[in-house]
Image (cartoon, rainbow, N blue to C red; front, side, top):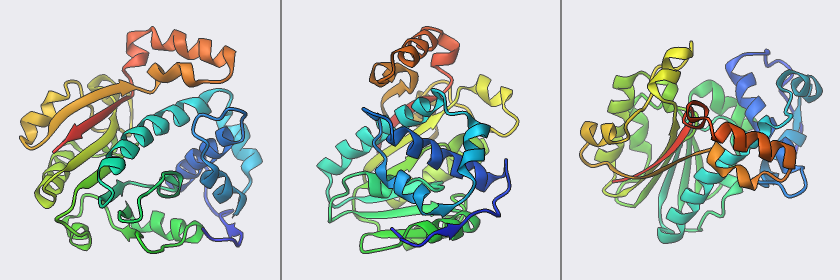
Length: 268
């Protein structure tokens, strides 16, 4: 990763880049805790290299326990991704809607795997100031709904597709077309993503797609095979601070809260 300080002071509060920076900051914040869940030292290093008023951001987001929700979600997706890469060290990894996430550097990526971080040009422009490309790691500046970018990715190898914090912001038809293009491009692989239920979609002003029955994706696309699901809250035992562990356990006991953000794993 790059060593010089990069100037992000022009990022406006509550903008899309600000939201991505918040997520990076939350992971970095959690990584400094004793017995960190995620241990995202790459995120901490990235934040250290960014010139921004993180003290104000801390006051805005108030990471008093909420950092654990971010860490638990990422930890579970990392575990599934690590399992796949352990079985397929020659995989192609597509991290869709990557934002400023440091997952490409956080995971133990096999030397034979090729990793592609994909996001819109505005995001990749910011990302290139923080992270450097190298052998086996590339960034693609394109909307995931644009069919053309997939031509830049080699086919013929197992594919790991990660979509954290992405699909709920796409329209249902766009989700369906995206998944079809991905399974058409690759012969085998896994799809890892998070989604809110349809009720969450209706409550949010910016979310457009929710998933109630995971078998719906199998009906959309016969090549997709549902493997498993969990929730971020279900991992509450990992939280090192007792009062927050109790709070998350209580939230996990409430069905509506427990199911608001589910993590899904599919094969194809």
